[in-house]
Image (cartoon, rainbow, N blue to C red; front, side, top):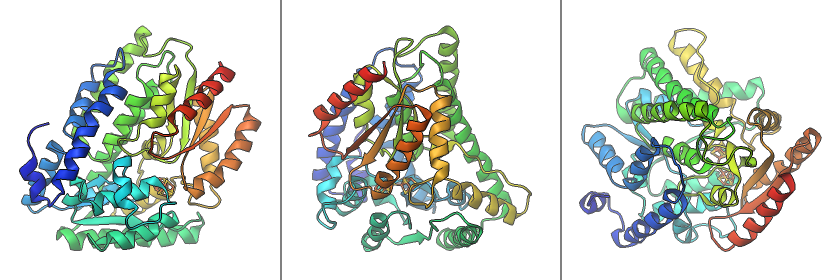
Length: 423
Ligand code: BJ8
């Protein structure tokens, strides 16, 4: 990474503390990613993005702001990217995936709370994330209780708009959600001074659908045996999707897919043919949370699918307008987002259907249910998923963990035993 100290200083970051983070990332990345064998050539772009994660992209955000553009930070898949883009703003995903930020989060939050929330709050409180420092506005949403209350804290640092997400999927709930989407559009028009019209919405819908299609294409290649790309690499790409430039990212994913499709044709894989195939389902894995995938793949199994917000939930559904008025576009956006299946909804049967469908599509040998510690909604939903998978004859393992390394040995032992059972 180049020298960005001036840039970081201009963002009022805690440089000394941030240096510690910059020192910790390269060895972690080296051990988890660069040590893999036979990686696709196309991963070199994503290696570069990670090496510049707090550099070049932040520089781009700064240049955007200097031209009068706005930067928005988001934390959840329900916040519509199309509207942010149509307002001429840049959206960046701010969920924290590192233990590094947790102690600062615990200064203002209870300790017995999900590490993802503690990490993102800690990143802001400690001024160690240049993405947070670049944001003109944060966008929260009423999903789980911990997040709901975290917005009140973040609002003390950066203006935070909260979208009210209903937690049932009846017609009346959709009407409420549609109003929220419209309110969000108005809020962004006010923030950016840009009117969002039908044409801009249509262009944004197309642009972001292209990004989703590229990710879908990537995931399609993971259905092959041998699998042409590791689960760790696929996860990294999903994580980068949350903050990279949309057009560039889409082009690079498509380039990589050309290579992966060729690999599939030639039967080239990163794991031997017949290696155990695992699907991960549950809580999201924000960058640089690679813990579970690394353990699974070090044990010789391939992660071939993620039914998570850093997986299929992010790209599976497209925005499909039924007409060409501004209202049609907004309605299609609202519908697409409302149909995401997060455990904060009740009931959430469609997620269970998705898990079974994906397990079959990706021909998995077993499912690992990943629960971030203290994430109640996903923990409770486990019981229903367990029953459904048992009925479908699909082996399942439950792993609850945080961002620390203390339990790595124990998780590895459990995963080894699970793989032994399904081999
Ligand atoms: S759509 S999963 S991104 S809310 S923060 S719920 S891990 S206790 S992130 Fe989420 Fe949107 Fe749903 Fe996806 Fe649990 Fe932690 Fe809450 Fe979390």
